[in-house]
Each structure stands twice: as structure tokens, then as C-alpha cells.
Length: 271
Image (cartoon, rainbow, N blue to C red; front, side, top):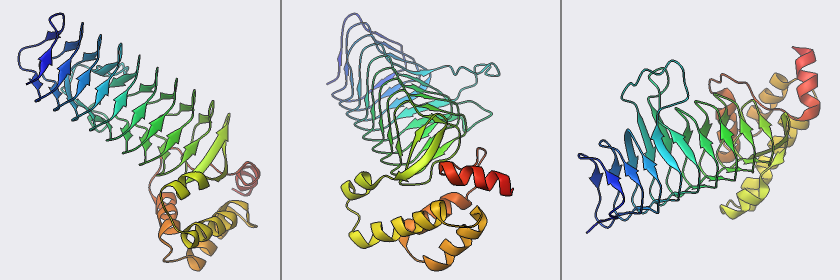
């Protein structure tokens, strides 16, 4: 059986899963779906076509599925989704998508969104992502699985952050971050690989060493960026982690790629 506190307002039509708990002063809209054993602690707002996954926990004063902060939005029936076992802490805002974007804002399973995080319209956050306090995301941001976003970072619209990447606290991220990369600064520059994250995820020594060598060649070697890219492709073909980074670099991007501080200036001059 689900539990709905007497002070909560659950609109007719909302679907409340078995074992879900809707705490005091929560508001759940008519098109919302609350998964089994999910917990809305208190003062939570879930609005629009929003799905909350099983065992997810939403903390006081967070809002999920509200209309996007987009002046072009005209009330279209777009969607929002929060994955299973994800924790959404106090004062987090997650807005639904827009028809000019994907039409869906999605936060994956097993994520932790710490207090006062903003997830804008059409963002896509993978599984196991940790987002620290006061992080803000523009619309259409994509974050890969197991990435870690440091406190008070600001992420520009349309930026892609690759799987397993690490964003340092108070960083301004205006371009794409390679998988397993570690960036920091305002504006952020590529500083290193997220070696701690790679080890925690169980990648073996040979895989990490190959990725480190490819990283050194691509982002710290001689020559312009495209020359270094060709060299990496030839030398490291078939290395799984390197191939993932190369595929990320090759994929379409609206924001370009974050480089190291030295090579960013050299590559711009060469272009």
C-alpha cells in the first residue's frame, strides 16, 4: 500500500506506485507517475508529464517537472524523468523539456543531485552521476554515466560531458569535456584524466596506461590538434577507452571541445 499524508495534494489521475510515500505538504500533478517505494519527504512539487523512478527520494522544497525557463515555451506536453534510486536533495529544480529540444529532461538511475542544483530543460544526465551543491546547467546539457560535477560549477547550454569525467568546483564549462577527462577553471581547461574515477570503476592497469599515453599525445604533444588526432587514431586503434574518447571527439558538437591551457591557444592561432 502507498501512503499519502493528509496535507499532501495529489491530483486525480496521478499514478502512485505500491509502497510509495507522499509526505506532508507535497503536490503531485495529474499526469505524474510516482514509482514503487519512491519517497517524497515533504514540500515536494512534481508537475507535468513526470515519472519518478522506483525507490527514488525527493527531499523538501525540490521541484520536478515544472515548466522550463524558456520564453518560447507555450505549454506543450513535454516530459521529465528521474531514474530509480536517485536522490534529489533540497531546493533542486528539474524542468521538463521543450518541443525545440528533445521534449524530455532525463536524470538517470542511482544519481545524487545535491542541494540547490538546477537541471534545465532538455538536459540528459546518465546513471550514477554525482552533482554537488549549487551546480547550474543550461538547456540541452548532456552528462555521461558516472561523471562527477564539483560544487558551484556552471555548464553552458549544449555542452557534452563524457562518461566518467570530473568537473572541478566553481568551474565555468563552456565546451565539451572528453570521457574520463578532468577539467577545472574559469573558463575551464582540460587538466588531466580522472584517474581516481577510472580506478574506482575497475579498469585494469593496461587500459588506463593506454588511455594516459593517448591523452599525453593528443592534448600535450607537438603539432596542431588534427595532426595529433591522426597520430592517436593510428597508434591506439582497438584500445577500448581510447576509442570511446575518439568517438566522442568525432561526434557532432555545438560547443567544441575543451583543450589544455597551452594547446588551446596554439590551436586557435594555427586555425
